[in-house]
Length: 279
Image (cartoon, one colour):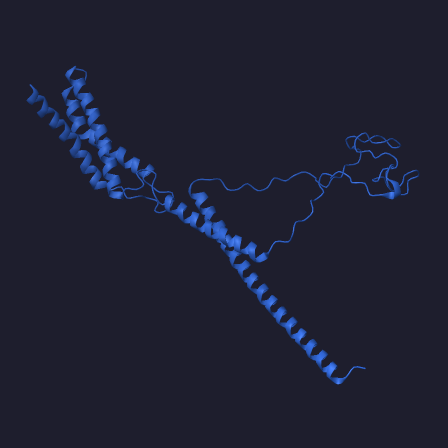
């Protein structure tokens, strides 16, 4: 016969178990709240990343994702009057996918059709080949905390790659590591050098009496310098502008004009001086 002490011990044990259950339930609820908060934070981060990636794609001229094409009826039904491939008229058997009498897939209730195919004694289950569209057995349930940690790691990596992409997109394709002033000076100097080459060609043409001296002097003092300046201005506007950032890159117009206006005539003067020294 049970005594009061045994009842008291049993009550204490039940109370301890209830307390442990309540603690486990509280811990589980706290863990779920923390996971939901982390999931909401990751969802917001992914939304911001998606928006930023869309802006980067638009900046470099990528087309937007096309809307999903409207597909046909995939419900597997057929319209009245249409026939399914492999099916025959009523009363016949199907050429493809037909089940012989006695097959396990035959409809129940048909005369002469058993529950199992012949040759399976005792109604033993016969292994059937996997049919297309049948889902594979589910693997073990993954740990949600581990999945969230992996998503967080991928989001951090995406943030890093987005920052690298933005840094590259903020640099112009022409001489990206140079400063704007050095880039402009190099472009104007190169265009002026091209003008000097054209001037030398015109000098040779003038020596051959193909071009008059008036045209040569006009091209050297005005035409070629202005043409070189305009070419450098257009080059800086086309290849000196980054994909992200200011719409109009600095072109340093006074610097370019002075460089082109001085370099071409000075090169012609140097050519004349060298020609006289050689003679």
